[in-house]
Amino acid sequence: MAGNSFGKLFRLTTFGESHGQAIGGVIDGCPAGLKLDLEKIQKELNRRRPGQSAIVTQRKEPDTVEFLSGIFEEQTTGTPIGFIIKNANQKSKDYSHIKDTYRPSHADYTYDEKYGVRDYRGGGRSSARETACRVVAGALAKQILSDIEITAYTASVGEIELQKSHKELDFSVIETNPVRCPDTATAEKMESYIKEIRAEGDTVGGTLQCIIKNVPKGLGEPVFDKLHAELGKAMLSINAVKGFEYGSGFEGTKMKGSQHNDLFNNDGSTRTNLSGGIQGGISNGMNIYFNVAFKPVATIMQNQETINAQGESVEMQGKGRHDPCVVPRAVPIVEAMAALVIADYMLQNKSSKF
Image 1: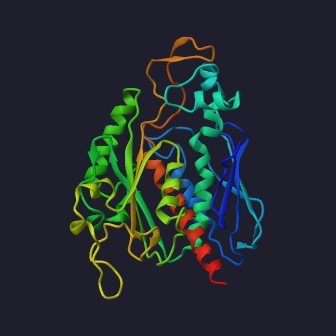
Image 2 (image 1 turned 45 degrees about the vertical axis):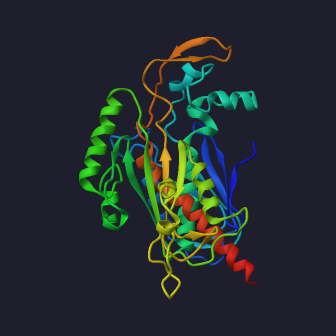
Image 3 (image 1 turned 180 degrees about the vertical axis):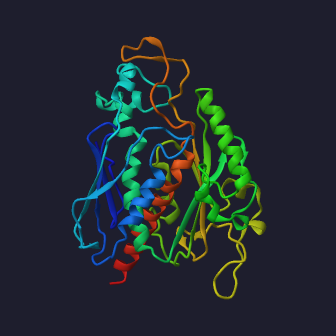
């Protein structure tokens, strides 16, 4: 299986399955001599951890990261950083009913068609449990990017949307509610709605917004490695993501050029930022901001028509522990992937000047 690595100079390779002994990764290209705060890395993992509230999957995993190499006395040595996260609360029997059955809109069918074999326990390699490895690497990348702020938050759940712009929001509120929405009143509506959806045995999607502040000018490598293209790839590689837009996005298509152009100030900054901090695929020093769309989780606790491995029509219902909405737990994942992209380009910029 290819496609398990991300990044060029700062490169993450992940391994493991949802119900295997452990998941883990190898981080290559981390500069030597970086003093790490290991507690911050664990804190980021705790933000993604299952079972953290009543509106997420109740799988109980400690998600404790164990570093195997590349760190000595809490400093990076410049060698590959290996780590594992042990799986402690698998309930594989919850998936025995789909051993030969394909869940609609899940990776079950395509994995079987491509490889001729699949680990049906929790989705195996296609499980979002793999994203814990990304959070570890992203938390480490954040410590390289000490002056750069990366903040993601829930902007919508179903039809419930955050009505305030990011300039009006109080980001200190994000971690005070289980939905991770920076507006308390909207967060309460979202939480209630997710609980209703869960009671129906159904799931719901939503969107995240992410803002990256204090980005230096000059990140990005045209023509095919534009900064926004790599951010798009990073976000679209996350389980359940269906869309990515940065800057004015699709709303910009409704505007005239005279309305959309970001006029310059004398110092090179711009009066508006419809470009989303990126022009010509290169960061211009303004804030980078983008939206990420997540579909409803495919596994629902309702009867659905599907097919089995023999091509026969059958009826199935999801079992086990699943998120009714992945959006709240995806916040640290989106931040992690953004950090991986920015750290990689920072290192590319540094090497290009030698």
